[in-house]
Amino acid sequence: MPLLSILIWSPLALAALLAALPRSRPGLLRGVALLATLISLGQAVLVACAFEGGRHGLQLAEAADWVPSWGIRYCLGVDGVSLLLILLNAFLFPAAVLASWKSVQDNLKEFLILLLGLESAVYGVFLAQDVFLFYLFWEASLIPMYFLVGVWGGERRVYATLKFVLYTLSGSLIMLAAILWMAFKAGRGQGTDFSLAAWQGLALAPQEQAWLYGAFFIAFAIKVPLFPFHTWLPDAHVEAPTAGSVLLAGVLLKMGTYGLWRFNQSLFPAAALQYRPLLVALALIGLIYGAFMVLVQTDFKKMVAYSSVSHMGACVLGLASYDLQGQSGAVLTMVNHGISTGALFLVVGMFYERTHTRDLSKYGGAAARMPLMALLFTPVALSSMGVPGTNGFANEFLVMVGAWRISPWVALVAATSLVLAAAYMLRMLQKTLLGPLGEAMGHLQDLDLREAALLAAFVALILAIGIWPQPLLDVMAPALKDSLAHIPLS
Image 1 (cartoon, rainbow, N blue to C red):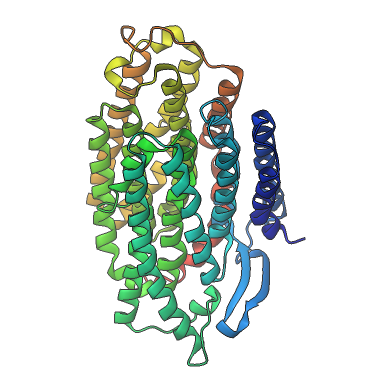
Image 2 (cartoon, rainbow, N blue to C red; image 1 turned 90 degrees about the horizontal axis):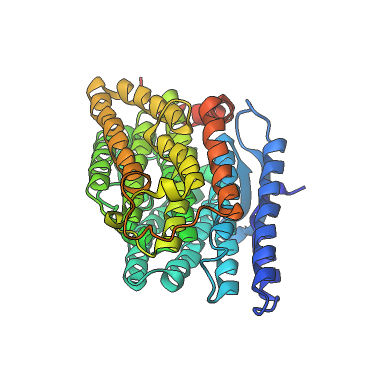
Protein backbone atom coordinates (compact mmCIF):
# COMPACT_ATOMS: atom_id res chain seq x y z
CA MET A 1 0.00 0.00 0.00
CA PRO A 2 1.21 3.55 -0.70
CA LEU A 3 1.16 4.44 2.99
CA LEU A 4 2.95 7.75 2.57
CA SER A 5 0.65 9.00 -0.19
CA ILE A 6 -2.39 8.02 1.85
CA LEU A 7 -0.95 9.87 4.84
CA ILE A 8 -0.35 13.05 2.83
CA TRP A 9 -3.57 13.22 0.85
CA SER A 10 -6.21 11.84 3.22
CA PRO A 11 -6.49 15.07 5.29
CA LEU A 12 -7.07 16.99 2.05
CA ALA A 13 -9.67 14.46 0.89
CA LEU A 14 -11.48 14.72 4.21
CA ALA A 15 -11.29 18.51 3.94
CA ALA A 16 -13.28 18.18 0.69
CA LEU A 17 -15.85 16.12 2.60
CA LEU A 18 -15.97 18.82 5.25
CA ALA A 19 -16.64 21.43 2.57
CA ALA A 20 -19.79 19.56 1.55
CA LEU A 21 -21.27 19.64 5.05
CA PRO A 22 -23.74 22.38 6.08
CA ARG A 23 -22.18 25.24 8.02
CA SER A 24 -25.33 25.33 10.16
CA ARG A 25 -24.10 22.18 11.98
CA PRO A 26 -20.97 23.37 13.88
CA GLY A 27 -20.95 20.28 16.11
CA LEU A 28 -20.88 18.02 13.06
CA LEU A 29 -18.11 20.10 11.46
CA ARG A 30 -15.94 19.88 14.55
CA GLY A 31 -16.59 16.19 14.94
CA VAL A 32 -15.68 15.38 11.34
CA ALA A 33 -12.53 17.51 11.54
CA LEU A 34 -11.46 15.79 14.77
CA LEU A 35 -12.17 12.38 13.23
CA ALA A 36 -10.10 13.34 10.17
CA THR A 37 -7.09 14.26 12.31
CA LEU A 38 -7.47 11.11 14.41
CA ILE A 39 -7.57 9.00 11.23
CA SER A 40 -4.37 10.75 10.16
CA LEU A 41 -2.82 9.98 13.54
CA GLY A 42 -3.72 6.32 13.07
CA GLN A 43 -2.16 6.35 9.59
CA ALA A 44 1.04 7.86 11.00
CA VAL A 45 1.15 5.08 13.58
CA LEU A 46 0.76 2.54 10.75
CA VAL A 47 3.74 4.12 8.99
CA ALA A 48 5.71 3.83 12.23
CA CYS A 49 4.73 0.16 12.56
CA ALA A 50 5.83 -0.53 8.97
CA PHE A 51 9.14 1.28 9.54
CA GLU A 52 12.13 -0.99 10.24
CA GLY A 53 14.23 0.41 13.05
CA GLY A 54 18.00 0.20 12.66
CA ARG A 55 17.84 0.07 8.86
CA HIS A 56 19.75 2.68 6.87
CA GLY A 57 18.34 4.62 3.94
CA LEU A 58 14.82 5.61 2.97
CA GLN A 59 11.92 3.28 3.61
CA LEU A 60 8.39 2.91 2.22
CA ALA A 61 9.60 4.73 -0.88
CA GLU A 62 7.16 5.68 -3.62
CA ALA A 63 8.13 7.02 -7.04
CA ALA A 64 6.30 7.84 -10.25
CA ASP A 65 6.97 10.09 -13.22
CA TRP A 66 5.14 13.38 -12.94
CA VAL A 67 6.63 15.81 -15.47
CA PRO A 68 9.39 13.67 -17.02
CA SER A 69 10.34 16.28 -19.61
CA TRP A 70 11.45 18.54 -16.73
CA GLY A 71 12.93 15.77 -14.61
CA ILE A 72 10.18 16.12 -11.98
CA ARG A 73 8.98 12.98 -10.22
CA TYR A 74 6.53 12.22 -7.46
CA CYS A 75 8.99 10.74 -4.96
CA LEU A 76 8.31 10.05 -1.30
CA GLY A 77 10.31 8.31 1.40
CA VAL A 78 10.74 8.23 5.15
CA ASP A 79 13.75 7.84 7.41
CA GLY A 80 14.09 8.00 11.18
CA VAL A 81 14.18 11.79 11.41
CA SER A 82 11.19 12.41 9.15
CA LEU A 83 9.27 9.59 10.88
CA LEU A 84 9.51 11.36 14.24
CA LEU A 85 8.41 14.65 12.70
CA ILE A 86 5.36 13.18 10.97
CA LEU A 87 4.35 11.52 14.25
CA LEU A 88 4.67 14.90 15.96
CA ASN A 89 2.59 16.47 13.20
CA ALA A 90 -0.07 13.77 13.51
CA PHE A 91 -0.29 14.30 17.29
CA LEU A 92 -0.57 18.09 17.20
CA PHE A 93 -3.39 18.46 14.68
CA PRO A 94 -6.08 16.73 16.80
CA ALA A 95 -4.86 18.95 19.63
CA ALA A 96 -5.32 22.02 17.41
CA VAL A 97 -8.90 21.01 16.58
CA LEU A 98 -9.70 20.46 20.27
CA ALA A 99 -8.01 23.73 21.23
CA SER A 100 -10.34 25.65 18.91
CA TRP A 101 -13.48 23.77 20.00
CA LYS A 102 -15.02 26.77 21.76
CA SER A 103 -12.78 29.67 20.80
CA VAL A 104 -13.49 29.61 17.04
CA GLN A 105 -17.13 30.30 16.15
CA ASP A 106 -17.04 32.50 13.04
CA ASN A 107 -16.32 30.90 9.65
CA LEU A 108 -15.78 27.58 11.41
CA LYS A 109 -15.97 25.45 8.27
CA GLU A 110 -13.22 27.45 6.52
CA PHE A 111 -11.05 27.34 9.65
CA LEU A 112 -11.22 23.54 9.86
CA ILE A 113 -10.66 23.07 6.13
CA LEU A 114 -7.51 25.20 6.35
CA LEU A 115 -6.25 23.14 9.28
CA LEU A 116 -6.60 19.91 7.29
CA GLY A 117 -4.96 21.48 4.24
CA LEU A 118 -2.05 22.61 6.40
CA GLU A 119 -1.68 19.09 7.79
CA SER A 120 -1.34 17.64 4.27
CA ALA A 121 1.25 20.25 3.28
CA VAL A 122 3.43 19.65 6.34
CA TYR A 123 3.40 15.89 5.78
CA GLY A 124 4.56 16.55 2.23
CA VAL A 125 7.48 18.70 3.36
CA PHE A 126 8.83 15.93 5.58
CA LEU A 127 8.29 13.10 3.08
CA ALA A 128 9.12 14.59 -0.35
CA GLN A 129 12.30 13.26 -1.98
CA ASP A 130 11.94 15.31 -5.16
CA VAL A 131 13.03 18.90 -4.48
CA PHE A 132 10.42 20.41 -6.79
CA LEU A 133 7.74 18.49 -4.87
CA PHE A 134 9.33 19.59 -1.59
CA TYR A 135 9.20 23.22 -2.69
CA LEU A 136 5.52 22.94 -3.65
CA PHE A 137 4.63 21.57 -0.23
CA TRP A 138 6.86 24.17 1.44
CA GLU A 139 5.02 27.02 -0.27
CA ALA A 140 1.61 25.34 0.13
CA SER A 141 2.04 25.34 3.92
CA LEU A 142 2.25 29.14 3.82
CA ILE A 143 -1.26 29.59 2.39
CA PRO A 144 -3.35 28.07 5.21
CA MET A 145 -1.20 29.76 7.86
CA TYR A 146 -1.68 33.12 6.12
CA PHE A 147 -5.45 32.81 6.49
CA LEU A 148 -5.42 31.24 9.95
CA VAL A 149 -3.55 34.23 11.36
CA GLY A 150 -4.98 36.87 9.03
CA VAL A 151 -8.65 35.99 9.52
CA TRP A 152 -8.89 34.47 13.01
CA GLY A 153 -6.00 36.38 14.63
CA GLY A 154 -5.94 39.30 17.06
CA GLU A 155 -6.23 43.04 16.54
CA ARG A 156 -2.87 43.39 14.74
CA ARG A 157 -3.37 40.25 12.65
CA VAL A 158 -2.95 41.99 9.28
CA TYR A 159 0.45 43.42 10.26
CA ALA A 160 1.61 40.10 11.74
CA THR A 161 0.42 38.12 8.73
CA LEU A 162 2.08 40.38 6.17
CA LYS A 163 5.33 40.33 8.12
CA PHE A 164 5.24 36.54 8.37
CA VAL A 165 4.48 36.10 4.67
CA LEU A 166 7.04 38.65 3.44
CA TYR A 167 9.82 37.12 5.53
CA THR A 168 9.01 33.56 4.52
CA LEU A 169 8.35 34.31 0.86
CA SER A 170 11.59 36.29 0.51
CA GLY A 171 13.61 33.35 1.79
CA SER A 172 11.67 30.93 -0.40
CA LEU A 173 12.40 32.90 -3.59
CA ILE A 174 16.12 32.89 -2.82
CA MET A 175 15.93 29.14 -2.23
CA LEU A 176 14.03 28.71 -5.52
CA ALA A 177 16.93 30.27 -7.43
CA ALA A 178 19.31 27.76 -5.82
CA ILE A 179 16.92 24.87 -6.56
CA LEU A 180 16.78 25.75 -10.25
CA TRP A 181 20.58 26.06 -10.40
CA MET A 182 20.96 22.62 -8.82
CA ALA A 183 18.30 21.12 -11.11
CA PHE A 184 20.11 22.30 -14.25
CA LYS A 185 23.42 21.14 -12.78
CA ALA A 186 21.98 17.67 -12.09
CA GLY A 187 20.52 17.57 -15.61
CA ARG A 188 24.09 17.71 -17.00
CA GLY A 189 23.08 19.72 -20.04
CA GLN A 190 20.14 17.45 -20.88
CA GLY A 191 17.47 19.45 -19.04
CA THR A 192 16.65 19.46 -15.35
CA ASP A 193 16.65 16.82 -12.60
CA PHE A 194 15.02 17.58 -9.24
CA SER A 195 15.79 14.24 -7.60
CA LEU A 196 17.39 14.70 -4.18
CA ALA A 197 19.31 11.44 -4.64
CA ALA A 198 20.83 12.76 -7.90
CA TRP A 199 21.79 16.03 -6.23
CA GLN A 200 23.73 14.23 -3.51
CA GLY A 201 26.08 12.80 -6.12
CA LEU A 202 27.00 16.14 -7.69
CA ALA A 203 30.56 17.44 -7.61
CA LEU A 204 30.34 21.16 -6.79
CA ALA A 205 33.16 23.66 -6.64
CA PRO A 206 33.80 25.19 -3.17
CA GLN A 207 32.59 28.67 -4.20
CA GLU A 208 29.51 27.15 -5.82
CA GLN A 209 28.77 25.19 -2.66
CA ALA A 210 29.18 28.35 -0.58
CA TRP A 211 26.56 30.45 -2.36
CA LEU A 212 24.14 27.52 -2.74
CA TYR A 213 24.46 26.76 0.97
CA GLY A 214 23.79 30.43 1.72
CA ALA A 215 20.66 30.50 -0.44
CA PHE A 216 19.14 27.47 1.24
CA PHE A 217 20.33 28.67 4.63
CA ILE A 218 18.48 31.99 4.44
CA ALA A 219 15.16 30.28 3.66
CA PHE A 220 15.55 27.77 6.47
CA ALA A 221 16.96 30.29 8.98
CA ILE A 222 13.88 32.49 8.50
CA LYS A 223 11.59 29.54 9.12
CA VAL A 224 13.45 28.33 12.26
CA PRO A 225 13.63 31.35 13.02
CA LEU A 226 17.31 31.92 13.74
CA PHE A 227 18.65 35.26 14.97
CA PRO A 228 18.52 37.86 13.33
CA PHE A 229 15.67 36.51 11.15
CA HIS A 230 13.40 35.95 14.15
CA THR A 231 11.46 39.22 14.40
CA TRP A 232 8.35 37.91 12.60
CA LEU A 233 7.81 35.15 15.15
CA PRO A 234 6.61 37.02 18.29
CA ASP A 235 4.11 39.07 16.26
CA ALA A 236 2.76 35.99 14.47
CA HIS A 237 2.42 34.03 17.72
CA VAL A 238 0.75 36.84 19.64
CA GLU A 239 -1.84 37.49 16.93
CA ALA A 240 -2.48 33.86 15.92
CA PRO A 241 -5.40 31.89 17.38
CA THR A 242 -4.39 29.24 19.90
CA ALA A 243 -4.49 26.44 17.32
CA GLY A 244 -2.30 28.50 14.98
CA SER A 245 0.28 29.12 17.70
CA VAL A 246 0.36 25.42 18.64
CA LEU A 247 1.01 24.40 15.02
CA LEU A 248 3.41 27.24 14.26
CA ALA A 249 5.63 26.39 17.23
CA GLY A 250 4.99 22.67 17.11
CA VAL A 251 5.72 21.76 13.50
CA LEU A 252 6.15 24.73 11.15
CA LEU A 253 9.35 25.95 12.82
CA LYS A 254 10.72 22.40 12.50
CA MET A 255 10.52 22.69 8.72
CA GLY A 256 13.48 25.08 8.98
CA THR A 257 15.69 22.87 11.14
CA TYR A 258 14.71 19.84 9.06
CA GLY A 259 15.77 21.71 5.92
CA LEU A 260 19.13 22.65 7.43
CA TRP A 261 19.75 19.00 8.20
CA ARG A 262 18.28 17.43 5.06
CA PHE A 263 19.64 19.87 2.44
CA ASN A 264 22.44 22.09 3.74
CA GLN A 265 24.32 19.36 5.54
CA SER A 266 23.97 16.59 2.96
CA LEU A 267 24.23 18.55 -0.28
CA PHE A 268 26.95 21.07 0.61
CA PRO A 269 29.30 19.38 3.11
CA ALA A 270 32.33 21.57 2.44
CA ALA A 271 30.24 24.74 2.80
CA ALA A 272 28.66 23.30 5.95
CA LEU A 273 32.09 23.27 7.59
CA GLN A 274 32.93 26.70 6.14
CA TYR A 275 29.74 28.23 7.58
CA ARG A 276 29.95 26.33 10.85
CA PRO A 277 31.42 29.19 12.96
CA LEU A 278 28.67 31.54 11.74
CA LEU A 279 25.99 28.93 12.46
CA VAL A 280 27.35 28.36 15.97
CA ALA A 281 27.55 32.10 16.65
CA LEU A 282 23.97 32.77 15.48
CA ALA A 283 22.68 29.77 17.44
CA LEU A 284 24.35 30.99 20.64
CA ILE A 285 23.07 34.54 20.17
CA GLY A 286 19.54 33.27 19.60
CA LEU A 287 19.80 30.92 22.56
CA ILE A 288 20.83 33.65 25.03
CA TYR A 289 18.99 36.59 23.46
CA GLY A 290 15.71 34.66 23.35
CA ALA A 291 16.04 33.71 27.02
CA PHE A 292 16.69 37.32 28.10
CA MET A 293 13.73 38.52 26.02
CA VAL A 294 11.45 36.07 27.83
CA LEU A 295 12.54 37.49 31.18
CA VAL A 296 11.41 41.05 30.34
CA GLN A 297 8.01 40.22 28.83
CA THR A 298 4.73 41.05 30.53
CA ASP A 299 2.59 39.41 27.83
CA PHE A 300 2.03 35.72 28.62
CA LYS A 301 2.01 34.67 24.97
CA LYS A 302 5.12 36.68 24.10
CA MET A 303 6.98 34.89 26.88
CA VAL A 304 6.25 31.54 25.25
CA ALA A 305 7.01 32.94 21.77
CA TYR A 306 10.48 34.20 22.73
CA SER A 307 11.21 30.94 24.54
CA SER A 308 10.85 29.30 21.11
CA VAL A 309 13.61 31.55 19.76
CA SER A 310 15.87 30.31 22.55
CA HIS A 311 14.98 26.63 22.19
CA MET A 312 15.38 26.66 18.42
CA GLY A 313 18.80 28.28 18.89
CA ALA A 314 19.73 25.22 20.95
CA CYS A 315 18.42 22.98 18.18
CA VAL A 316 20.59 24.70 15.55
CA LEU A 317 23.59 24.50 17.89
CA GLY A 318 23.12 20.73 18.10
CA LEU A 319 22.93 20.49 14.31
CA ALA A 320 26.11 22.57 13.95
CA SER A 321 28.05 20.15 16.17
CA TYR A 322 28.19 17.61 13.30
CA ASP A 323 28.36 15.02 16.06
CA LEU A 324 25.98 12.08 16.53
CA GLN A 325 25.11 12.98 20.13
CA GLY A 326 24.71 16.68 19.35
CA GLN A 327 22.50 16.06 16.33
CA SER A 328 20.48 13.46 18.24
CA GLY A 329 19.85 16.21 20.79
CA ALA A 330 18.84 18.58 17.99
CA VAL A 331 16.27 16.17 16.52
CA LEU A 332 15.02 15.34 20.00
CA THR A 333 14.67 19.09 20.59
CA MET A 334 12.50 19.36 17.48
CA VAL A 335 10.14 16.72 18.87
CA ASN A 336 10.20 17.82 22.51
CA HIS A 337 9.86 21.52 21.75
CA GLY A 338 6.78 20.73 19.68
CA ILE A 339 5.23 18.89 22.62
CA SER A 340 6.25 21.23 25.45
CA THR A 341 5.76 24.56 23.72
CA GLY A 342 2.58 23.34 22.07
CA ALA A 343 1.27 22.58 25.57
CA LEU A 344 2.38 26.01 26.80
CA PHE A 345 0.40 27.74 24.06
CA LEU A 346 -2.61 25.62 25.00
CA VAL A 347 -2.25 26.83 28.59
CA VAL A 348 -2.02 30.44 27.40
CA GLY A 349 -5.18 29.97 25.34
CA MET A 350 -7.07 28.41 28.24
CA PHE A 351 -6.16 31.29 30.53
CA TYR A 352 -7.05 33.85 27.87
CA GLU A 353 -10.51 32.32 27.30
CA ARG A 354 -11.20 32.85 31.00
CA THR A 355 -9.52 36.22 31.65
CA HIS A 356 -9.58 37.92 28.20
CA THR A 357 -6.11 39.31 28.89
CA ARG A 358 -2.51 38.13 28.57
CA ASP A 359 -1.13 40.84 30.88
CA LEU A 360 0.76 38.94 33.60
CA SER A 361 0.41 41.86 36.02
CA LYS A 362 -3.30 40.96 36.21
CA TYR A 363 -2.59 37.27 36.86
CA GLY A 364 -1.74 35.45 40.06
CA GLY A 365 -3.20 32.97 42.52
CA ALA A 366 -4.70 30.68 39.88
CA ALA A 367 -3.64 27.52 41.72
CA ALA A 368 -6.23 28.19 44.43
CA ARG A 369 -9.04 28.46 41.86
CA MET A 370 -7.72 26.00 39.25
CA PRO A 371 -5.94 23.10 41.01
CA LEU A 372 -6.23 20.84 37.97
CA MET A 373 -4.62 23.49 35.77
CA ALA A 374 -1.81 23.86 38.31
CA LEU A 375 -1.31 20.08 38.36
CA LEU A 376 -0.94 19.86 34.56
CA PHE A 377 0.75 23.21 33.88
CA THR A 378 3.64 22.54 36.30
CA PRO A 379 5.17 19.51 34.49
CA VAL A 380 4.87 21.38 31.18
CA ALA A 381 6.88 24.27 32.65
CA LEU A 382 9.41 21.86 34.17
CA SER A 383 9.81 20.27 30.74
CA SER A 384 10.74 23.61 29.19
CA MET A 385 13.31 24.04 31.96
CA GLY A 386 14.86 20.66 31.13
CA VAL A 387 14.30 19.13 34.57
CA PRO A 388 15.43 15.47 34.77
CA GLY A 389 12.51 13.12 34.33
CA THR A 390 10.90 15.31 31.68
CA ASN A 391 11.46 15.15 27.95
CA GLY A 392 13.43 18.42 27.88
CA PHE A 393 16.33 17.00 29.91
CA ALA A 394 17.52 14.40 27.37
CA ASN A 395 17.71 16.80 24.43
CA GLU A 396 19.42 19.55 26.44
CA PHE A 397 22.02 17.11 27.75
CA LEU A 398 22.81 15.79 24.27
CA VAL A 399 22.99 19.28 22.76
CA MET A 400 25.45 20.27 25.50
CA VAL A 401 27.55 17.19 24.68
CA GLY A 402 27.62 18.30 21.05
CA ALA A 403 28.45 21.87 22.07
CA TRP A 404 31.37 20.63 24.21
CA ARG A 405 32.77 18.81 21.17
CA ILE A 406 32.68 22.06 19.23
CA SER A 407 34.47 23.85 22.07
CA PRO A 408 34.24 23.86 25.88
CA TRP A 409 33.71 27.62 25.66
CA VAL A 410 30.72 27.12 23.37
CA ALA A 411 29.27 24.65 25.87
CA LEU A 412 29.87 27.10 28.73
CA VAL A 413 28.01 29.90 26.96
CA ALA A 414 25.20 27.56 25.95
CA ALA A 415 24.87 26.26 29.52
CA THR A 416 23.94 29.74 30.76
CA SER A 417 20.68 29.34 28.85
CA LEU A 418 19.71 26.53 31.24
CA VAL A 419 19.91 28.92 34.19
CA LEU A 420 17.95 31.56 32.27
CA ALA A 421 15.31 28.98 31.29
CA ALA A 422 14.84 28.06 34.93
CA ALA A 423 14.51 31.76 35.80
CA TYR A 424 11.87 32.58 33.21
CA MET A 425 9.82 29.41 33.64
CA LEU A 426 9.74 29.79 37.43
CA ARG A 427 8.71 33.42 36.91
CA MET A 428 5.93 32.24 34.60
CA LEU A 429 4.66 29.79 37.23
CA GLN A 430 4.89 32.39 39.98
CA LYS A 431 3.07 35.07 37.98
CA THR A 432 0.19 32.78 37.02
CA LEU A 433 -0.33 30.18 39.75
CA LEU A 434 1.09 31.65 42.95
CA GLY A 435 0.80 34.82 44.99
CA PRO A 436 -2.32 36.88 45.69
CA LEU A 437 -5.32 36.59 43.40
CA GLY A 438 -4.89 38.85 40.36
CA GLU A 439 -7.57 41.28 39.22
CA ALA A 440 -8.33 39.14 36.15
CA MET A 441 -8.67 35.96 38.19
CA GLY A 442 -11.88 36.67 40.06
CA HIS A 443 -14.21 34.32 38.16
CA LEU A 444 -11.89 31.51 37.15
CA GLN A 445 -13.23 28.03 36.53
CA ASP A 446 -10.98 25.00 36.47
CA LEU A 447 -10.35 22.93 33.35
CA ASP A 448 -13.27 21.08 31.85
CA LEU A 449 -12.97 17.46 30.72
CA ARG A 450 -11.91 18.34 27.16
CA GLU A 451 -9.17 20.71 28.33
CA ALA A 452 -7.93 18.39 31.06
CA ALA A 453 -7.75 15.39 28.71
CA LEU A 454 -5.91 17.47 26.11
CA LEU A 455 -3.25 18.75 28.52
CA ALA A 456 -2.96 15.31 30.15
CA ALA A 457 -2.03 13.78 26.76
CA PHE A 458 0.83 16.27 26.45
CA VAL A 459 1.97 15.64 30.02
CA ALA A 460 1.92 11.88 29.40
CA LEU A 461 4.27 12.31 26.42
CA ILE A 462 6.49 14.68 28.41
CA LEU A 463 6.94 12.10 31.15
CA ALA A 464 7.17 9.07 28.84
CA ILE A 465 9.93 10.56 26.69
CA GLY A 466 11.65 11.97 29.79
CA ILE A 467 11.80 8.57 31.44
CA TRP A 468 12.64 6.55 28.30
CA PRO A 469 13.99 8.57 25.34
CA GLN A 470 16.03 5.67 23.94
CA PRO A 471 13.44 4.41 21.39
CA LEU A 472 13.42 7.83 19.71
CA LEU A 473 17.22 7.95 19.68
CA ASP A 474 17.38 4.46 18.15
CA VAL A 475 14.94 5.42 15.39
CA MET A 476 16.83 8.55 14.32
CA ALA A 477 20.39 7.14 14.63
CA PRO A 478 20.76 5.49 11.16
CA ALA A 479 19.53 8.60 9.33
CA LEU A 480 21.85 10.86 11.33
CA LYS A 481 24.83 8.58 10.70
CA ASP A 482 24.09 8.52 6.97
CA SER A 483 23.93 12.32 6.87
CA LEU A 484 27.06 12.83 8.97
CA ALA A 485 28.96 10.57 6.58
CA HIS A 486 28.90 13.47 4.10
CA ILE A 487 30.74 15.85 6.48
CA PRO A 488 34.57 15.67 6.09
CA LEU A 489 35.41 16.43 9.74
CA SER A 490 38.82 14.72 9.62
